[in-house]
Image 1 (spheres, rainbow, N blue to C red):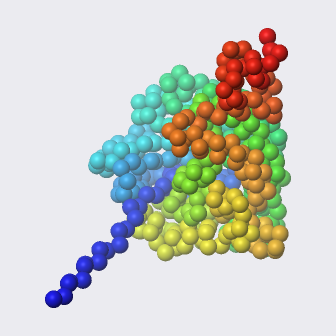
Image 2: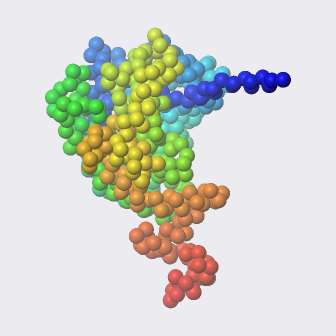
Image 3: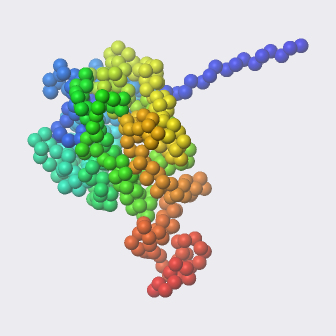
Length: 452
C-alpha cells in the first residue's frame, strides 16, 4: 500500500503594498527655492505652458482608482506634493476626496499634503480639518536661516508667510508636522533648529532631509542639470549641499537634546527608523531598507516614475492611461530598480557594522568611491557612521525597554545624568527621591551627596 504524495501548496504571493505620491501641479511652484531638485523637471514637458500644469479629471480619476486597486492592504495612504500642490485650489482636492470615497470599497483612505503653507487660508483650513489631512510644512528654521534659500520668485523672503500659514493650521486644529531641508548653511545649528521647530513652530513630528545634489559639468541629453548617481561624465556637488560629517554632527546635536528630555513627546523620523533597524524591524523609510522600489510618483499628466528622486526619462514606467499602476509596480524594470539597491551595494558596505540600520542609504546619493576604489558608496557615509555610532548605545537601551513592554522614555532618567546631555543633570530630583542612576539609594546618599 502506498501513500499518496501530499499536494504541494502554491507559493503565497506577497500582498502588494506600494506608495505612489502625486504631483498634480507637476514642478510648478509659487516660490523659487535655490536648492529645489524638482523645479527643473518642467523641462521634461517642454510643450506645456505654465498655466497648463494641472492634473486633469481623467488622470486624477485613473490615479485614485488604480492606486486603491493596486494596494492589497486595508489602509491606502495618499500623499500630495509638488511643486506646490495648493496651486490647484481646494476644489481639486474636494474632487480627489470624492473619488477616493467612490472607489475605496472597504479600504480606509488617508491623505497627507506637503506644502510651503504660503497659500493656506481659512477655506483651506476648514477643508483640511474636515477631511483630516495630515499636513507637512516645509520650513528650514528661524527667519534668517529659512530665508537663505527659500525665497519667492522675485527673490523675496518667505518666512513670515509660512508662519502665517502655520497659524491657519493651528486655528483650525489641523494636524501638521515639519520637513526641514538640511543644507550647508543651516546644518551647523542643530540646537537652534530643534528648539525653534519644537517650541516655537509646535511641531511634534520632525523630518530632516539632507540636500545632496550634483550639477553636470556639461548639459546631459535630457537637459536636466542635476544628475543621478549613474552619471559618470563629470559632475560637481552643489555649493548648498550639506557636508557628510556636517550632517552627522547635526543629527547628533539634535539627538543629544531629544534623548535627554523629549523621548515620547517629540518624534524625529530618522531616530525612529534607526531604532526600528536596531530592533530588526522594517525601518519604514525606503533609504534604510534593504531594497526599495515601492515608492513611486505620478506626474500631472499621468506619467509614473520609479521614485521621486529618479524623475528622468529612463525611469518613466508608463502612463495610467495605457498601463495600470499595479502593472507598473510589478514590472521587471521597477522590480530591478528596487533590488539594485541591495545587489549593487559595495563590499565595503556589506561588511560594515552599521549595515543593519543603513543598507547603503538612498541610491541617489551613492556616487562616491569606497576606500578600496569601488563605486557606489553613499556621499553621506561618514556622517551616517558618526550618527549611528554615537546614538547606538542609547537606542539599544530604548530597544531594551520596549522589549520589556516599557516606554522608551524610561532611559531619560539615566541620560540626564550624563554631563554631555545636560547643563543641570540632576534638575528636578529631590533629596529623598530615588537616585536616577538606579543604585537603589536615595539621591541625597548617592549622586546628591552634599546637595541641599
